[in-house]
Length: 442
Image (cartoon, rainbow, N blue to C red; front, top):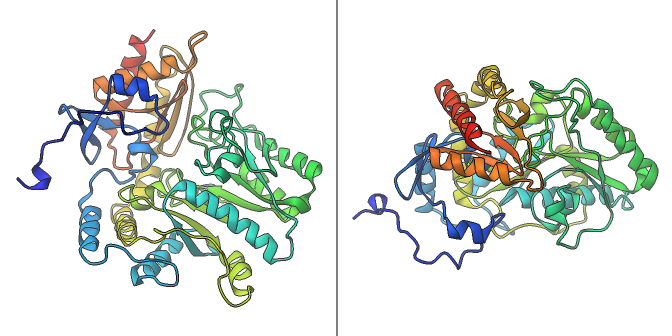
């Protein structure tokens, strides 16, 4: 029997795999196992189809098991299974980096590769520190994140991140502070960007006054925060944050691990909002999630300062065994081609109003206290149960899984980010099933 035709193998013991960000005891008492995927659907081990409302984990932007990407990986695996990037490389790594810079904002001429969003964030933080030192600003070592921010799970990422559960159990980097988040409970059921809140960027001035601008290397924010429950930036907020950074010589890092590759109707959130940062972190949709990969987009100014002005020899003592892995490069190149050939970024822009109408139809649905949306992203915030935060969201997740739809929940907020190939009929199906589940949940 060919491997492709093999029936799913069910594990007889679930104990060995310590699952990430999972209630392991609860899961293993009632496992949810996926066997295959195609386009907009997963198939479970018992043969049920699930409409994917989350693009896997914000990442399968072009849909599942797309043949051009599958074939590119298959072909590369038979030609070059691995090539180191320390003092060696392979031609396709350079070709892919060139193609990637072409869709980044003007001035982003270089790419540093890693293997995940977490690694991209830690790489960007290191590059920011290296840049400040290279230009004679070595006292600038402080890093600024934002409350409710998520920047992966490396020690750098959890330190600048602002999700308490991710931080409290671990030692954090010193010299890190946080500006206020942008969620305003007074502005609910807003379509797109809230009108009020640009002034929240001024909180960075508070930290400048507290610590001194000459101690701050960089500020990192998600242009649209995903893991905190879909927090859309207020109009003018990112522009003001950019201006404050410029005024004080602080680098601005956009964490676009979620927002990159079409999620907001453009190649990047920087393009969507018209605000250009100094560094951009990328992952997830970079390879359509088919092979792990992360990247940092770097401006020519930063690259020249760190690399061209360094003494002879290694300029940045940082990197990964699997940087620019041949299979990841092949997958990424095929994904970029597919995005362009099918006009998926533009497709999101065309669907955005239809998507907004659908998710906001849940205004008035049982338990719904807010709906937030932008591009092909939505957060549906539910009233928590008294004394049991997160329980209602978890029950909605389970009911939808049983009913044939996959969502993501963050506490009591449903987060939606479907593949960019979703049809209008599938939008209606997804939102309709959510409404039905909410009606049945206590």
